[in-house]
Length: 357
Image 1 (cartoon, rainbow, N blue to C red):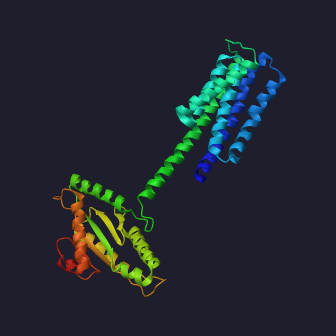
Image 2 (spheres, rainbow, N blue to C red; image 1 turned 30 degrees about the vertical axis):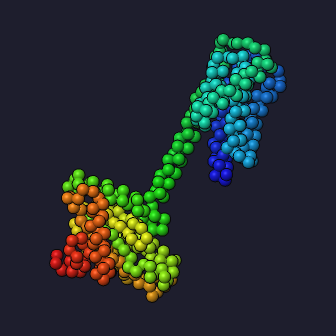
Image 3 (tube, one colour; image 1 turned 180 degrees about the vertical axis):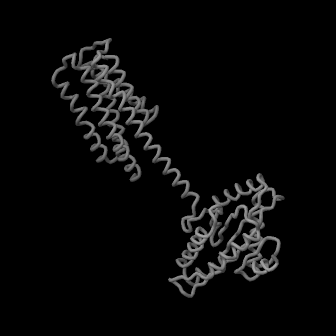
């Protein structure tokens, strides 16, 4: 309900601007068409109220309503009814009548599509019927030069304003859509890609490597004894550790690298175009830096990482096999003492690997 109210008030604000300008310009158009007909004074009074007071009354009516969105739709139907009324009052003068119909039709389509166009048309027909009961039915087949020029401001400026409003709305919706998409792909705690988004990127990188015959590496990172950290220092401390690792990955990876939170205490990194030995050196430097971090909340807390690395293998048929290689390497890192980097296929920790290189 609260969201609907906000949307309704937002709609009322947008229509307040367009209604104010549209009815002011419409006053010129209708007034020029009515002047030769010598209408009674009350008709001029209704015309002025409709053009000068109604936009402000409609906005306040919608803004204070319990359901602003529905209130504004009601206001639009009143606009359409009054448009039909003035068409009959102008004795169907061709250009002013066509201008009134087209401007209101454009407005109704922009607000509610075909359904609201039909509702607005019905309200216009009702307004014409009421107008015919009040004014003598007649038809003026010619539009004078004065009436032509009086219609031009409405024909020129109102579509421009409505187009600008629609553009602003589309721009805002596009930005909100991009923000929602980013949120749906981001892990809220660490700011990295979430599990699904990272695996999508892994598939893209796998296909790129196959297509371009290039290499690369992926790393799976596990926080050692994370359950014990939660049990000993509390889940708040555990969340701090997760955020610290996410922050370190964001700050130390290359722009081309893709970090993510794989789930729980596991993180993952795609390292495009990086040979396995260099990827191992990068991950070992990350492991060393993370091990030296201090935590103000718990100075005694020290955290280490186990990391499994796997290079792209052109023999693999899909990205899952590449991920399995990194997972096997991570398993070896965890079962051979933790706090180390293991590359798939060598079973050696990173210091031993670097000695061999």
